[in-house]
Image 1: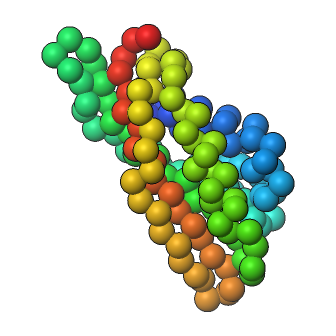
Image 2: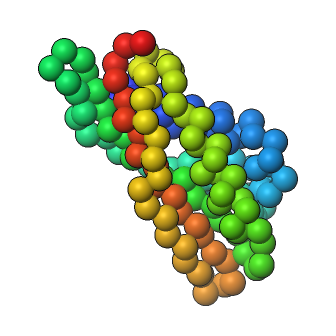
Length: 131
């Protein structure tokens, strides 16, 4: 994982964990899938990167996967909207990179056999090296 991917993941983890509105919907925000956690919870997963540089500046396009996991009739829409709003705050300088754009590019909702559900959000972040 390059520096930009790690910076985006860590910044997303911090933003989501520190969001008081999101904490009203979930029991926790985790780095990856937790071995044991009370649902609902948020999991910050994979970060994939591609070159997005310019002639004179290194750059990365990072796609970050964030998953909301729950069961029953929980506030899926409200929690998912809060996650999306919080992730908009990724923009700005971080760890030697400048995150210049943040855009949700894919969402997926699925049900499990045990009555659980997963709402997956993929966010595209375009980053340029340097501040």
